[in-house]
Image 1: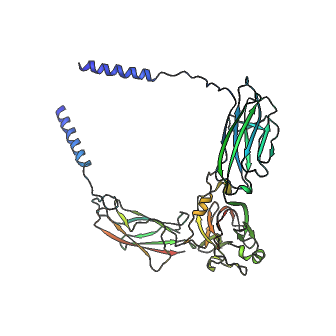
Image 2: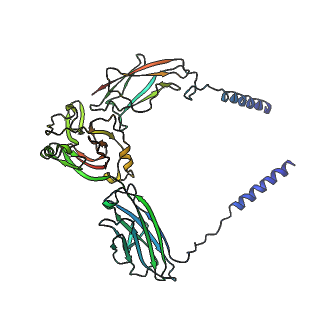
Length: 328
Length: 132
């Protein structure tokens, strides 16, 4: 009795395994009839004025039904100079390289609308759209309508967005030099010399200096003009330059827009606004390459993130990039 | 022989059940109150607002005098530091560290109490910070 029961279970298990291992035969997906399209947004991170938003727009129709004749993108806010729809269809080869093949005339932009007319018999294409974010879009949201037409008079479209455009500004690769352009303005996002700082004392938010001191790790520093003189050793501060700038040191925030490194990290408007400067210091000593600094100006008008792209102790200079948002 | 093996297995199983069923009480923080009476700090770290160490060298922990001496870099923002204590197993720290701690008043060093796993031994540690 016991062996019958055991054998029955065994047979059932084997039957189950045989059934579950049956493979379904692969079938090539059927191409739907009519003009088809799809779109993805390529660019990541906050959408900042002056930068590109990049999209890939794919469209296709069965060869026996017709050919692609045009691709159009309409933005809800007119793009800045540099906005275009690529006339090349891209695919990725076996080694991961993007290969572009020209399929149409160069794009024409008229107001909000950018068009590429196909000049080769094309049944399927993926065009790239680059929207240069204009000043008018700051703090607003933008929507895009991608559409394609085919020779059999079909039209298809896809709406992308809305996408929020950041309030922030940014400036890349300012070079601060000890005893040179050592005076940094957040409101202007510029570096100034001693004489220029003296002429614009209200604008100076930070002083850059490099010191190699015995028994002290001082190195590269960004210091508020009003800071204790021990943090500004042998620095002659121009008359009238006395802003009390508050700052918080940061590390491992390699904002991709500023650093242009491989890290997918971004500082957004919200990050800038949420940093608490209540008990913040007015100096940052011993700053290193790839370090960061959250900054609030003395008049609370601006909050900023400074990324240190590089430092050079020999020439006593620092290359820095700034993201900044106006608060008041 | 077979009977002996069965008896041994039964004994082991019973023992395992008894051991696993031993329950420790839980304190107000949801932590187990155990039998351990050891009570000391085994390691100490001090991080800046950028979550990097501000120590110039390892902290000196004296478990007899119950002191921790730590030297920090020149220019360390003493108002915004994150202390980290490593404690002996099952011990806990009072008061809890829930964010930044202000160490700027060097004349009045900060103090924390280590409480043993059985909650019967309490030792107050004083953290002395000096600047490079």
